[in-house]
Length: 538
Ligand code: B12
Ligand code: SF4
Image 1: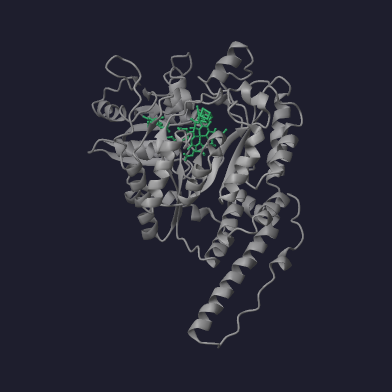
Image 2: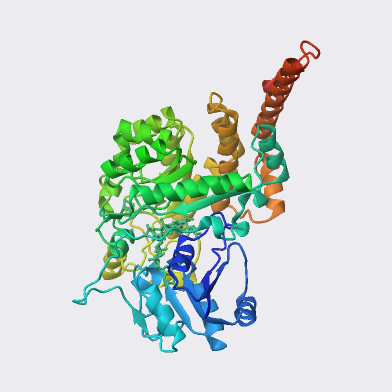
């Protein structure tokens, strides 16, 4: 049977990383079936195009996965596919949280023939077998012999054959502006490809923050893959990188990569011992980063960026969402520790908590400015279904849009916080994003990093320019051209330094080759390129 796994596009960014669930289910598909993958962020399709794809490839089963945010789009695509008689199975966090919705048991329309609840590692082969026999059940749940929910062990986690998969659609170099590619090649980063690959080393987080679906979904039973299997995957990626003459970075998508510090250290030591370092990013809660040894191992094993859910600079706010283990007084010291080891932070903040008052953006920005430069991201507190937050707000009658996902509006709250209006939260978010990614802030971040290596600074600049795209529409070439123009000051600064490096290394090699024949090119003065501040955004 031909099977299509489809992930709808998020409408915000291009593909920056493959969705792991598709590749994992593909690896877990019993032999004898052909699996097609379509990620809407890489291959945008409307309903008609998807249906045409399904028909042309004689697809017998379509599997759709989606987060809450994209589920309305996922339903529209599922409806179109079912209309032409091809069965649809849906899975992932959202349908697990509101199973009646996709099955039309809540009074709304039906969108799926079957749903897979929770982790589908063990149920997927059954679904495929039933679909082939034409007898799909409505609900597949991972249950043990006594009918209790069973969390799959990760002992036999499959090897995902990244080296045999077609990753062309996830090549990020394609999206780099030409100028960025030229600068990168000037400093020896002559990559043909650049991929960010998701790796899962473990599942589960027991912390139970009120707004988070993870503790409910993966359970508080934490499970890990063996160190050896993770390291083998890294080594496979390293050899793929060599073959492609490209660069691969890894996103450890575990919810809390250091949830068991002893195990994390053991994995990091194994990475170092087997020379399996690739640049990596991971999510780690700030309370676990007080550990100097852990941070040092992170740096030695290739760690570059750490995503931290700091959420708020106000302890009372944090307590109100069961995240009191975050200590705002310690944020600065944790971030400075990371910076000392050459690590940078993606710091995530949530506005609209009940303790927030007007001016929350300004206060948060002032604190952020006192830290080493990082990539702050801002969002509103969102009640995802089946979270304790959703239940608390629903029972207090505070949800203004109880099914906010069916009428998705970016950066708009689904309930009214106690001390701010919904519009005020939106304008606080607007201020935070504008101020964090305006050209002078970007220029001063690059200046702060003057002591770091040129490739590090170039990547930091590219990351900043890309991250602003989470808030500011930046999908078109025209948008990018404007951003590059606005940020021309740090860009030119880095270009000149890259040229200097190139001239210096060329003249060194020509001196070595033809003793004393050529004078080195006169050094360019990088400060001479500071052509005044960039103009404010148009
Ligand atoms: C990686 C990740 C991202 C990436 C996504 C890009 C990418 N290419 O992966 C990034 C960093 C961009 C991201 C962003 C966001 N994310 Co996110 N993210 C994750 C994370 C950490 C890992 C996802 C993953 O790969 N898991 C491993 C795979 C194997 O698990 P899985 O996807 O759940 O799949 C299993 C099952 O669900 C099931 N399954 C899944 N799909 C399907 C489909 C079929 C047909 C079947 C049969 C089974 C099935 O089978 C799989 C194997 O068991 C999860 C948390 C987590 N641990 O899952 C949060 C998570 C998915 N994210 C979440 C959220 C809220 C967001 C944001 C909205 C946050 C924000 N405020 O901005 C944004 C949305 C961005 C956007 N515009 O799309 C929530 C989603 C909650 C929900 N109900 O939707 C999660 C669960 C985390 C949380 N804190 O609650 N995220
Ligand atoms: S620490 Fe992170 S993953 Fe764990 S429950 Fe809290 S928000 Fe979710």
